[in-house]
Length: 79
Image (cartoon, rainbow, N blue to C red; front, side, top):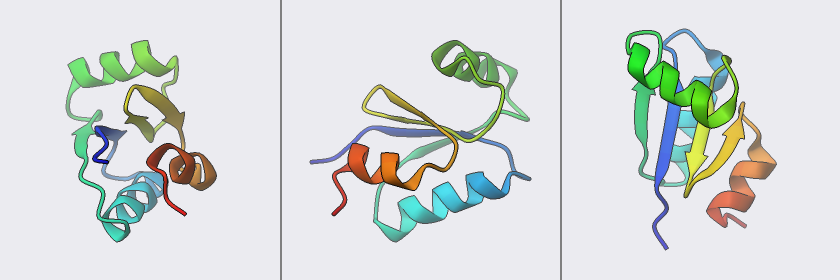
């Protein structure tokens, strides 16, 4: 089953890079928003997560804050 995945990130965030690499490694298609350059997306991220920190990852409307590998595996159904 394909998941709808959005990553809110910044170019300098090492955990954002890890999250995107993890998605690429598992062939998960995602939309990435650079919240350092896009104030509207940053506001959207804060409304969804209550967080200023990145990454914020949305998988099928489930919000995961940070590079939380166990939560990502569970949300994506990765064994």
